[in-house]
Length: 167
Image (cartoon, rainbow, N blue to C red; front, side, top):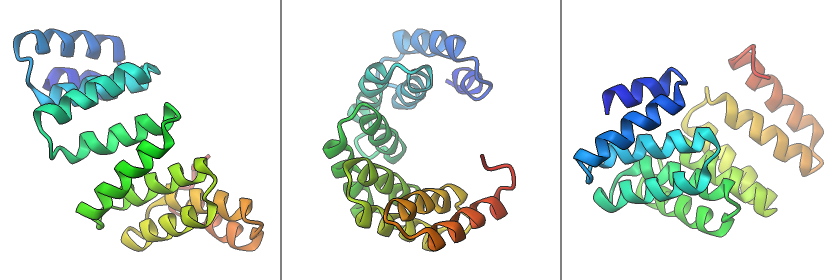
């Protein structure tokens, strides 16, 4: 699993996939390996396989927060927006102190078209982590959609201040 995770970190996705699949043949209930394989499939663009592996990780470790969060992101990208929204809301009800949960809920709500709710989610993420450049950027995008250009500019500038190379 450590080798697979390292290969994943290095961007050697096919190698990571091979190592993790081999591992799971020997230890078929290893939730962390399913998580890493799910992330690998996600990065390869295989969202259906990512969903399947992330669900397996949760099957073997029901309170595996990282797997739940990654599953929510995958569901969102699969267009299963209501499922993703419900999952992020459940994660927030369990632990409201994780800014990434609020940010991911905001992204999902934006895709659903609930822009005001999306705005509130990003603001919660920023309250929890005032250095969360992506949340400022996402808030800026949402504010622009809500026709609040001055507020959008402030948030885009904050994202760039936090990460000067933020595209």
